[in-house]
Amino acid sequence: MPESRERGIRDIIREYREKKIEGLFLDLVPYRTDLSPEIVRLRNRERNRHFLAQNEEITPESQLAWGERYLLREDDIYWCLFRKGGDFIGTIRLYDIAPDGSSLTQGSFMIDETYSGEAPYAVEAELLSLDFAFDRLKVQSVINEDRADNRIMNSLTKRMGFRFVKDTVICGASYHYYLLSEEDYRKKRGKAEELLRYWKER
Figure 1 (cartoon, rainbow, N blue to C red):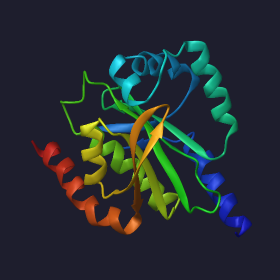
Figure 2: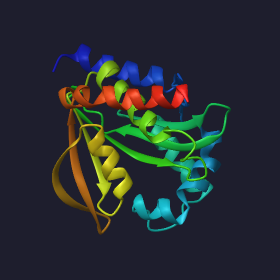
Figure 3: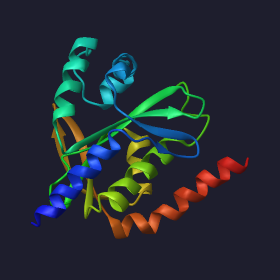
């Protein structure tokens, strides 16, 4: 693997840990320690704990400790989702980013139910993060693992072009393991973008 490729990926990750990605309905805001209380509040909701296979409530202290470890890693980028207007509404993350750009994993994805029906936030968060994966990091494939009983996320994952690979178990729960190539993503991306434009013009 060329050293320049690995260094380039690390440089992009560092850059975007300080740089907001703007969308039509929401922005991806890099994780900051002062956002920990919002993350704790949302992750500790019963529904989110279930779908994230989080067996116990996290604390502000444990989230801050996680954040300190996160900032030392160079294969991980974690965004907080903010709707236009400034409200925190969720998170999404790309991690285990291979140094050679062969793959990464998408996860830690949650949207506050209070806001989820007012705009296609989930679709746009997927588009922005996957655009980043393929356009900026230029990875070859993206891995996603959705809890088997999360029908909404499984449907969205397939809509974005992910292909089911196998069933797997995480923390004792059944998950579907998906893989997305850039080619399959490009085939599906246009329809997702059309949905955003439709909502914007309403």
